[in-house]
Every structure is written in structure tokens, then in C-alpha cells.
Length: 210
Ligand SMILES: [Zn+2]
Image 1 (cartoon, rainbow, N blue to C red):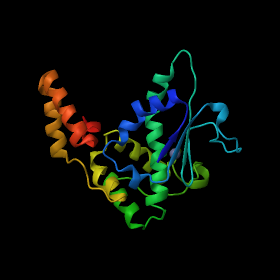
Image 2: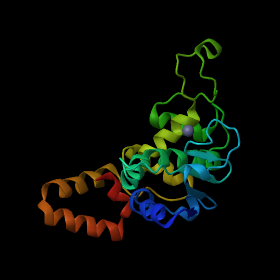
Image 3: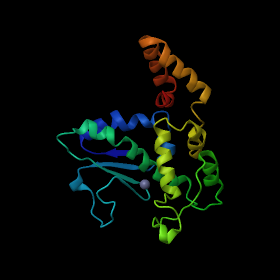
Image 4: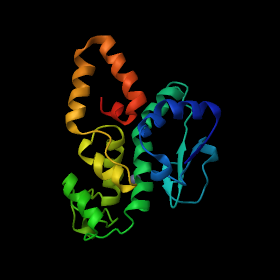
């Protein structure tokens, strides 16, 4: 994967977005992905309603508009976009690794069982048209959200499934996370520091779960 943007945007990308990807083999998970961090005026205008919003464009492009808001500052802005960045990565992943958007697709079924989410790929949102409660969230959007939570360390039960999509093994189990959390929370500043140092070398993926 490649990331493009102003030097100050890239610095903040590496500070806030890149840590979510620690321990993930990005050559396998996102081999041809391009991430563009753009001033709003540089977002391409295609007439699509998503033009000015963070979006994934099939097959390999994520664009994140970077709003320069004097009251907020760039740093806070990037922090506020972490979940959205993860969501767009989720779209890249389901298009690449779960392309068969059918209720009987084995991989989608596996994900559905894991998360308890019912599969429904219909994009309509209007209750009168779809017969669903409004707002209906199609599985592609659900997946992107869950993937983002997984990247942020909030879906340990998806670790093996997600890593397995691109041929990696789960980096942590719930037993391990329990031990890491105990060390992190109950051994004081020096224990915490030692753990973080150790994990950043030996198992950086575990850091998102602390
Ligand atoms: Zn989405």
C-alpha cells in the first residue's frame, strides 16, 4: 500500500492511522491500496454524493479529505478520522476478500455467525421500498464498521477471521490479552512501559487491545 499527501498530513497519518495496522502484513492485506490525504479542493469531482466525504473507490483507492479547521487543529482532526479510516479500509477488504456478496457465501456466513449480524446486501434504505426498519444497514457497511472496530482493538473475536482473510494467523488470543491487560493496568508505570516496549518489538498487533 502507498500513502500520498502533504508532509504534515503524512506525519499525522503515521502517528494516528498507521498504528492500527501494526502487526498486519499490509503487503498481503492491502497490496495495491492507495491512500490519498487531500485538501477538500483536491478531492476529484465526479458528481457522486460521496465526492467530498472520506470514501473508498473500487478497486484500490481511499480518499480522505483533510479539513483545515483553525479551531480544531490538524492533530485533533486526524484523531477524529481514525474510525472512518478503518471503515474505508474495511470496504477495500470486503471487495478484495469477500467479493461474493450472497447470503449463502461461506465466508460471509462465517462472518455473520461470528458477529451475530444477519446478512443482507440490499443497498435500499427506505422502509417502504425494502420492508425493513429504517435505517437498514447493508452487510457491506456493517462489515466496514466492524472491521474498523477490529482494527481499533474492540473486536477480539474477529482477530482470527480477519487475519485469515489474507493468510495471517491471529496475533493474540483472549487469554493473552487478559494477561497483557493485567500487566498493563496493575504493574505501575514501569511495568506498563516494559510491556509496551516488549510488545512493540515482538507483537505490535497486541498493542491495539490494551
Ligand atoms: Zn461505508
